[in-house]
Image (cartoon, rainbow, N blue to C red; front, side, top):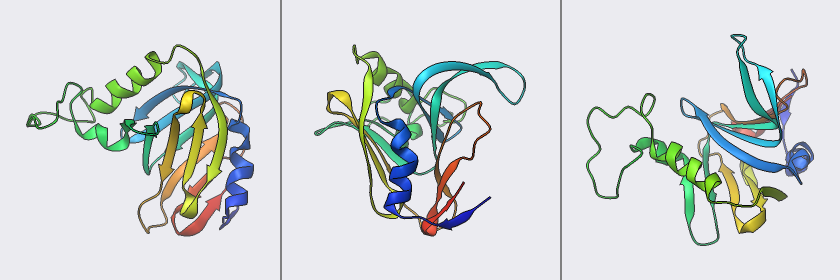
Length: 177
């Protein structure tokens, strides 16, 4: 595995694969966000079960949000609240984001349900320190913003089901592929 310091050009080169692709899902595995782009395809997971994925996947371990110019539709911290949470309510003591349906799960589903037309990636901008802005048709965007100084994985871009290197952005300016 090649590990080196990244620059914005590296990120733009790796993410160019997203341009023109349909953005069609936000899911999660524990607190890792998983975004799917492009054609839907079936692959076998690590247990041999069939699952549907996009031709390109973006797995995110840092802060992120899907927003428009004046509002946030869903963001990573929505995982901390039950699906039916209303601002100002107490969070039930028995609520467990790793087990229960969360506000993140609900709002991500609603975001895609409320877009009658396909969401197409129009452009990708690389920001400082591994941040990323993916602009979508209709004026919304997906933003990633690493927010700690550790050298852990912040996000990775790859093609599920293909034995190709993953593009991994880590803290402290490192990438691996």
